[in-house]
Image (cartoon, rainbow, N blue to C red):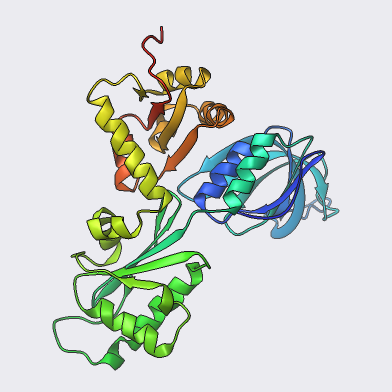
Length: 355
């Protein structure tokens, strides 16, 4: 999360979300009545007397909208908000009319509210110190897959195809275009704190590492080559995250911490431990007691529970200094949480009776 301005009262923040987790933080910070200012798309219709209105022109305009409705779209990685327009840079757009806008990755927004609560400021500042980012590259001579792990979230990009086929020997020059395209795609998602692991079933991974070193490309010092993953492409990315060597490489990541916490909680569930609860109803009750030490949530919980109730639950846990892990259902640990309804909480102390 990039923050260029943050004031408590009257509340104002200028932020740029950089990851899915940043969007979740903003979803929790934004409340009804807040005013969000950003560039957005709006259709302007030309209505002339005695003629039918045309389909209109879609333009980019800077608007301020007072928030009435909000939801997060995890698939498209955006927050959707709607409400009345309070300010506009285009005279043809009426104040007081309704507008819906998207908050998306890489685009800055201005948030205005009466006051930022302390825990909201803490949420925003914590995201400035974002977790390490890991780029997972899995390739062979036919294709390359790229996965970006940010915090506990995984984003897998479309495969890059080499255009080579069969088992014929190919010279180093044959790979140049393939490697250059791969470098370009990796560079687009690279940042200062990114670690890069290259793996795959063949020696093409080492050829790629050597190619980058020969080119003296800036990412070559970040790359670690790891053996043991037998697939390339998108499937290889998912396999890589399960591999012991990759897990060891990422042992200091937030995803690793969440995985350990989840595995511990699931193990204690099997033992009927009273310091673990896993239904939304029960987790909500122990949260109200301030008993939650850690909670692991996957997108599954939003299919089973109201989004606003989930956000309220997370805010309550945060106020009691509970650790929150929002996990991607495409990861192995996310699937484990899905299997128990999308939420697991580990407690500070045992609770024996919730009735």
